[in-house]
Image 1 (cartoon, rainbow, N blue to C red):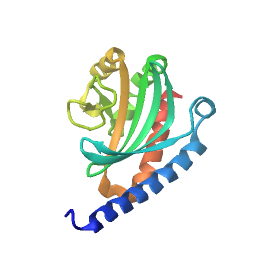
Image 2: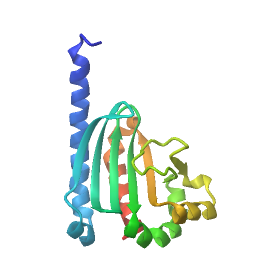
Image 3: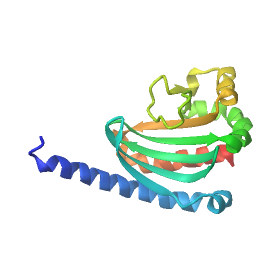
Length: 183
């Protein structure tokens, strides 16, 4: 394979098309963002990497508010060979402000196949059992305990890559839902 340049050219083409997809999502999010996000968050940012657990990825963060221990991100991710995902990530004052709203949203998140992060490391993004639990598999009491006892909160959904044609819409709709949880 190392003598076949087409392999890398194909990969580069896929990354370019995915960047364009995330750029379209970014434009939609800018239009949807409430004043609070527009006034406090830096501009949306698409980041590219080559080695999340050995595979390329693209991430769109918006909002992306980072003030010491106080983090507020909604992260749209493409992970090569795995999935598209949408994640709300909160720590510090943002976590504290959103706790009751997130607890009150248990049924809504349950109905939409969302997951809650259980890992102590907020920068792990895979959906294995040591990182996320499906909310529909939890009782309200277990879900509430995770929210109240964790240093950070991550609420996420993911979709297979073969759903490419609907990925942008799913990322936008998920962003709206996640943003509404903290608005």
